[in-house]
Each structure stands twice: as C-alpha cells, then as structure tokens.
Length: 203
Image 1 (tube, rainbow, N blue to C red):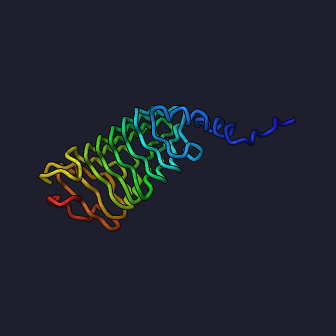
Image 2 (cartoon, one colour):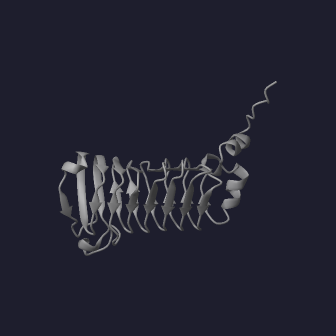
Image 3 (tube, rainbow, N blue to C red):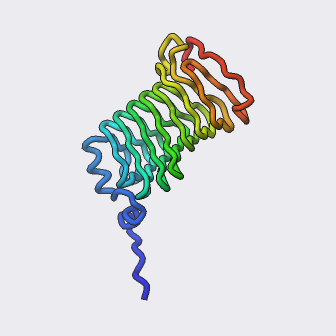
C-alpha cells in the first residue's frame, strides 16, 4: 500500500528542500523578511546579514549546487534564484534585484556571479557563465547568457567612464564582454547593437 502523501505546507517545503515557515521566521533575526509565509529559501542557501526579502522571493538550490549571498541586498517581489545540476550562484553585497522580476539561473556546472552594488531590474534573466561586476547593471527584459560586465562605480557615480558596465533594453545578449563605462542598449539581438559610452547622468 503506498505511503500517504504529505499535504501540509511545511512538509511540502521540506520535501522540496526549502525551509519551513518557522525556520524562515527564525531567519528574521538576521534578515528583513516581509512575509515569511510567501518566501521560499533553500536549506542549502547561505545568506549574510541584513538582506531584505519582499513577498514572493524564491531561492532554490538542489543538493548538487550552491548559493552564497552577501549582506544588505534587496530582493524585490518576483525575484527567482535557482542553482541546479552543479550550478553556483555567488552574490555580493548591496545588490538590488528588481523591481520587475529578476531571474538568476545557474545550471549544468555553470556559475552566475553578481558583484557588490550591482542593479538588475525590469525582467532580466541571467544564465550560463555570467559575471556581473561591481556596480554593473542590467535593466530591462534582457536574456543575458554568459556575459561579463566589468567592475566600476554604481549608477549614481561620476565620472561615467568609471561606472560598471550596463546592458539595457530587451532581447538576447549572449557572450558579450563589456569594459568599465560601456553600455549596450539592444532591442532583439544585442550582438547587432552598438557599444557606447555612458554619460554623466544616471543610467
């Protein structure tokens, strides 16, 4: 006779590798979690201190993968992080993910790394072997696959030529390598878009 299926919410969370609601509540001692009942955090995720997690955030890590998150990051609603099949997610500190839904997906032994002070919003999806440097930005529904965005100052800093690199717009950006102060605004295939210099107004 088959074993009865567990149907309570905490049992389902445990079966899928997530913390129970009570365990998420315990994290509130070091994190700012606005709605623990709607926040899913993998048991394998390592979090620093002072991170802000809005409702609907999902951090999913399977038993072959890893996820290390620094301090004082902001995870807006709809942020989805997943590491599977040997993937690795590495996030620094004071990163802004959202609003508008942000997805970071590391799989097939790939790694996605996001540096301190980076800003991602309005629907980007980051996959492959991607390195988003300190102060870099992805703004818009950009599918960023195996991109490298150089370190630099954040979007408020001047001079512009010393800011982190930026992808902005919508469409596919695959294999791009941008230097400090560079920006690509694409609509469709970013490979056909021009690389320009950032200006002294915020990106």
